[in-house]
Length: 176
Image 1: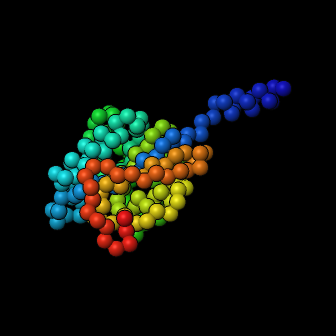
Image 2: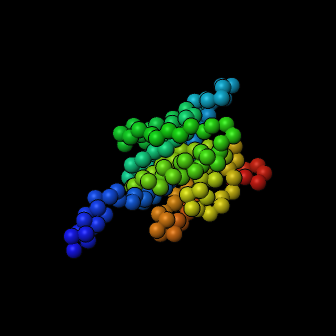
Image 3: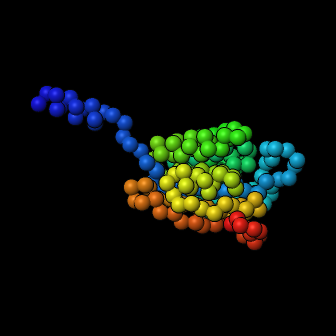
């Protein structure tokens, strides 16, 4: 009996398995064309960042993940400020996209509550899949309004695609 009680106490004292109640993936807002590799967001991007904060103000966002690029942090900025949060920043290393995707997916799986991930046209669709969602069509370089909402894995990882902010131009080619 004593062994059983010790085992039960160890289980109770162990870390609870966290899982997000909702994962929101958003494409970063429009960037300013300034000739650099790490541009800020443009005036249109600032308006879109405000629209994202407005769209998610009641979503209970507890965690925000961005990349090291300014445009992802600036897109999340109004929400970060409104919610008093700091982002968890992941660096995308050249040629290491699969590693980046797995690192972000592993970090998300350890969080709870609502998680916002602000990413790029080439990271959001693969992240949906890395998080257990379906294969999603690649995003166009000119599309900035994409939002993907994913339910917990325990509920079957349902995916809803939505839009935020201003309307994007019509897609060109085999992207969305």
